[in-house]
Amino acid sequence: MTVRELTDAIIQKTGAPRLPEEHTCDRLISGSWDMEVNKIATTFMATVDVIRRAAEAGVNFIITHEPTWFTGMDGADWLQEDEVYLAKKALIEQHNIAIWRFHDHMHMASEDGIFRGFEQEMGWEQYRMAPPTTDTLGFGVTGKPDGCYELPETTLRGLVELFKTKMNMNVVQIIGDPEMKVSRVGVLPGGGSLGLGTEHMPMRYMRLRNADVLICGDITEWTLPAYVRDAMQLGFNRAILVLGHERSEEPGMKHLGSWLMDIANGIPVVFLDAEEPFSYL
Image 1 (cartoon, rainbow, N blue to C red):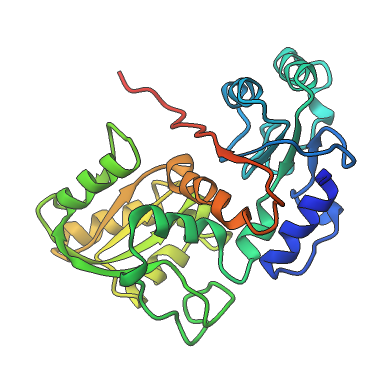
Image 2: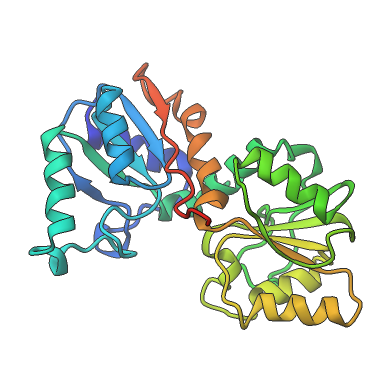
């Protein structure tokens, strides 16, 4: 099975309309469309460490959710004389690895693959709330799961401890009273908590879904965090828990392997964790 055959099958399975390559970041970053795929790795990001581990594992095709070349569209024109780019490119070519970006079609799928993997990792399928029936939340769709869950009551502290264990994190940022009661939780992984181009969307989402807590990927401190801090200081039962972009989206790539099984024609699939990018002193 070639890279082209496999990626065509992936896009077809998403149920999303196929985007022209000039209008999507879902394109081949390295390697050839005609390369025969021997072993697949899924990952949040094809970092140098991931590429090295892929080579050691005999992988020749990496499916990455986020950029290899440091900007949203993976453009490399500005990097042609950059020593980091040249060294990383040489590493990829040395091991003859094809890298394909699976981002836009994954989010546009009939079931968003990042939400699906997050839900599977947390074991929250049974707690999923019914999707919105109107577009008042600003997502542009109706009748599609929006990552809101009605959990057995716990505390914000208890929820933090759960995420530290599940996501292998030593530190989790929060705004809110650690002892506040929590049951209704909204999930905005990756850039969703930035508003997806509409700064006020996360605050409207929190209010209209009556969420006690929003699980965030990225944050802008003067938007959602400021809103939640003011709400807390006014006595409202509101909080946010910040995982960061990588930790909040990596589960989607971790569980992508099982989704690929029926189209991979027996090609082995492994997951390579890109790991949290930050260290804490």
